[in-house]
Image (cartoon, rainbow, N blue to C red):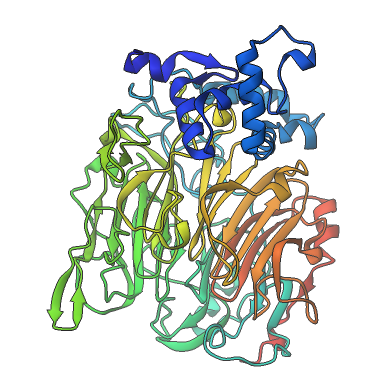
Length: 621
């Protein structure tokens, strides 16, 4: 009988496959372990090695391979070929950057033969999604004096390339989800359109000279439940627009039905530049360059995390991190669900606040109790608390006599470092940071499990961050997860080589995807995805070849197909209006979609000329 260490480390199959990997694939593919091993030995072609002229294989292996073929090996072959292909080589052969990148990637390359229970050496610090404008050299990490090993991690966590701000979907925020009318006005954007900034008020006249007419933006923020948005320029100035009934934009003018165009936001951060932002249904959170977070809007469930139970926060107030040490108080990323918020620090630690109904806080409970005979309450959190417990099922841990549904702690879970977070309506997905110790980064999910959006093969809520076991094994050795993205009831994971794995459901019709599944329409055509996002009923992906695709349902033009064209698509469809435009980032909201379009050279400028442009005078809201 194999020892536990040998079970996880001894290579017995091509590609660095261990007995644990074989057992995992066997369970998820529904094949016998011998059949899986034979298919792996066949290189994913469903034939024996002998038929390809290789060294003779045993008759048992041939028999097993035939059995695997009969049991669905053709599907496995497609999966194997898609997940192990090298799209970088196919789509960018001859790229001058490849040689330079090879040496950098060697530091974080994963290995399928390492001991999964061993201590992981993470690459720190975790960085904001955009460069800090306060740094004289934006390509260098800010020096930090901390206990953890720190290095220049900008190669591992690259910043978003700034670009011009564009949107598709109506600017009338009173429409999505509420009013059905014909999209005939100039501000009913049904294709990607460059947005102007709102005309400064008299109060802002003094700052008007300092405001660029067409600034480049480095970060865009909205979410599947948000009818409002925030964008931050490369110089760290925030602009907000969209629905503002709960004063979720924190504008000094107070609550109003809608703010049609990007309007400058002000708050207690003063002159410090901003480097992060996120939006929920009726609240917003921003992060400044010092690592402090500020929230505004509805706080009925404590989602603003200001350590107060007041229902509404009318002006931006600083968020409170309970028990955070001095070297773990620097916030670098934020993501908001409908009524909860998740923060990520430079040490890769997760903090959450807000509604606990579906386990979206990740603290292991909902705290459900009766307020009245027919009304339930939950143990919501009004301040941010660290969530350091991560679990996996006994089956996924390959424990003998595992009990179905039983959970155990992930080894060394208190030391796990996260590099990417994303919240759906009531769930969160997170990606572990790359390591220098050869471990493959893991994916964790928790919260509402409707439609299988958590990727565990069942529709069940998870109250604690749970390991998504499908996204492990030799297939992910060099193509490991790097970024998380969530829609309302779906989740996506972007890998190092530009593959996207999808789980859940974002269309009202059709089957749900209960476990992570490769979006083969992109992978099979050698597209290298650089950014992906999910909205209330839409999904977008953009590639390094200046191709953007979308699918789902977009009644208010959020799919970007153009006026008079279809408003839904069951399969990924090209957004023709963005043809040849290099989109550096995408954010999907409730009834709209945002884009950052690269504007660095003459070729970019030529592509931008093809995009529709909106003038301030055309917005008559």
